[in-house]
Length: 115
Length: 113
Image (cartoon, rainbow over all chains, first blue to last red):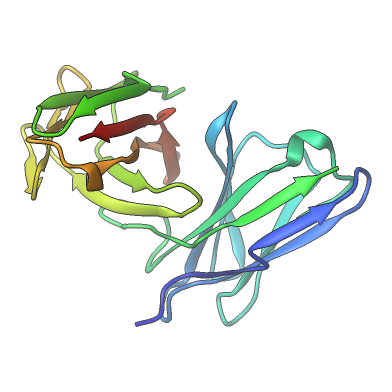
């Protein structure tokens, strides 16, 4: 069974640009959550999508947005990039939405560097 | 707001020794997770602890949960070099009927021969 895949794995952008990251969940999983990992702030929850609807959102500015398609694949977009957006972006898939006893499986991440 | 604190943040051990990583969380949570992350890699799920007194073991790692004390521990027995990694605990935080994981800062474990 294939795991969670994320593309691209590495990305270099400059300040002010925008970026789109993609996540394909495990087959049959309908929930995709996104996390940002930085050395200073650690792992922080961005948002969760289930059945093409945003179910939950973390404390990030509106520059961070996402969507989910009918095949459960999800994209995350960051507009007007700032240096502080440099991070490892992880997505996690689960069978159901974030509820009791619902384990998340993490993808390999996309390393974004903003210059 | 749920907060998760891990200690220590850095741990240097010799092979064969035992040690414990502590994970405290600030408010009630019905689930506690432990993950392992190798450098440049993603998170690998180690344990899911669902109830007070839960204990799970896999190889040289054993995790336990005390919901009354809001404390989980990850005990390492007779450490080996292959256990070198960063270990995260995460508690589940509810927002209404939904929720998300709140992670600790991680414990970077280095096991030296």
